Each structure stands twice: as C-alpha cells, then as structure tokens.
Image 1 (tube, helix red, strand yellow):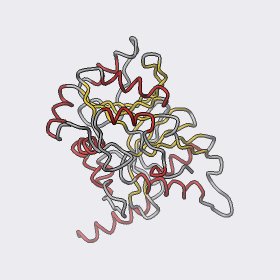
Image 2 (cartoon, rainbow, N blue to C red):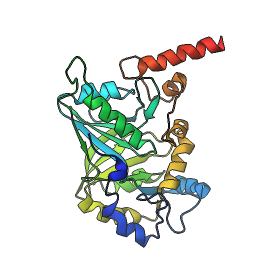
Image 3 (cartoon, rainbow, N blue to C red):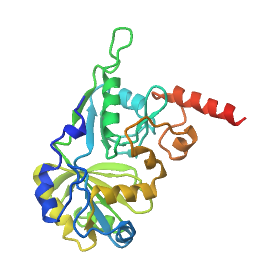
Amino acid sequence: MPKSHTDSPGMNALYGEHLLLGASFENAPAVSRYRGEPELERLEEAMGDGAILCDLSVAQMVLFHGPMATAFVEAAFAGKRLRVGECAFEAVLTGDGSLASIPLLARTGEAEYVCGDFSARADVLAGWLSFLHSIEQDGTQPFAGLEAEEVGGTHVALALWGRKAPMVLADYLAGASVPKVGSVSSCMLDRLPCIVACPDLGPEPAYVILVPPVHAVALWRSLLSFGEVVPVGHDGFRSLVRARLSWTRHLQTGSTVRVEHGELTAGGIVRHDDSYVGARGLQAERGAEREVRS
C-alpha cells in the first residue's frame, strides 16, 4: 500500500504559485491561507457570487486497480456500490464499527477506483486500508490481486467550487457537457488531459480536478484569470465543507471516532446492508444504544 500523505513531497508543482499569492503554511505542506484571503462569511459570499479554487494536492490519493479492486472496495467502503463513472463520499469503518474516515471514492474504470481523503484522518485511513489489503484468512490473502498506487505524484488535485463553477468549467470544455453531481469523467480542459469528479458538497456545484503536474501551473493560472474565482487555503476550504456536511465534524481528529448508525445512513455514506467491514460492529453498537434508551 502507498505511504502516508505526510511523507509526500506535497505541492511542489504549485509551490511557487502559492508563494506569489502570499501563502502561509502553518499546517505545512498545505497552504493554510493566502494573504488577504476573506474570512468565512466573505468566503460564503464568494461561493454565492462566483467560485473558490483550492489546491488539494497534499491529500492522500490512491488508485486501486486489478481483478480484486471491486471486491476490495465494496468490502472496505461502506457507501453505495459505484458504477463506472460515479463518485461519492463513503464511510470506511474498522472491524469494531468505529470510523476510519469518509473519503471521496470515484470509479474510473471497470476495475479501477480512485480514493481521495482531504481530512485530518487521511493517515488513519491509509493505515487501515493497508491492513485490509494484507489481511490473511486461512493462510491466503483474499485481496492478493489488488494493486494500490499513490497518485499524488502523477496528478495535482484542485477543487473548484461555487455557483459559477459550472460556467467557468464549461469555458474549457468546447461544448461538451459539464459533469453532473455524483459523476466522474476524463476531460480535455483546453487540451489539457484531466479527470473531473463532481461530488455532492451542498447547494453550490463542486468539482475536483485531477491534472498532471506538468500542466498544473497552466491550469491554476488560467482558472484564476476568471474574476469570479478566488484562491482559498485549506483552513477556509475545510470551514466551508464543515458548514455544508455535518458529518465532517468527525474528521477533525486522528483519535478513535464512533458515529451512530443513524447519522451515517442519514448522511448517505453507508448502505443499508451488512456486506462491508465494520457493519456488524456498527449494528451491535446500535443495538446497545437501543437497550440503553429502553
């Protein structure tokens, strides 16, 4: 399995661009904020009037592929079973039903998935998935055919989010349709090969764009050339996400986290069966909670 994101070279491709914008790196290597960056209330207005742009390239991003990819993903990720071209936030639970993390999962091929975790629990997730990958049962490894590769070095992840984000993205697509919520597709953005996912982040459209590092500076500068687009650091980005997705409050710590079954199902981040790792532990805790209430 790939190494922890804290061992990653980080955002080398855009480091110079961040310095030009007066970035501070209190949570290095991620940009904390930019010089003159608006506070949360003003960022909300920027989202409503235009769009924000955030470099997420320091996030933990893993490509799963091979003949065992689907079996592994559907066991490890508790959310919906994705079809090719779909993406969703999905809970990953440990064996006792506690929360490892809630990453964004995209199915980019018949036996190919990309997982991105932009939270403080990325290292917890990486450790747990590595354990599952190497687990043995009766002397065999159920997921021995799985290939897992860190893709942070091959792609830079950018978030474009706000009311005018579809208009900005459409300017690059030469008449092609802008990806719909819950979808992921390969796109040419002004002749630059990219992967674009459209996760559900609330009422304002949001896109996660994966661009090869060699093209990252060109796309970053091009997106910021739109007067509607404002650069935002990780602090502001995470504050905006927390304001729209209530379950993200559980992702702010690296310690053990337990979340009630009802909250997970209400958030649409676990499915209504017991075919994923941690389902029995989650159900057992749910039963214990009912006994206490009764």
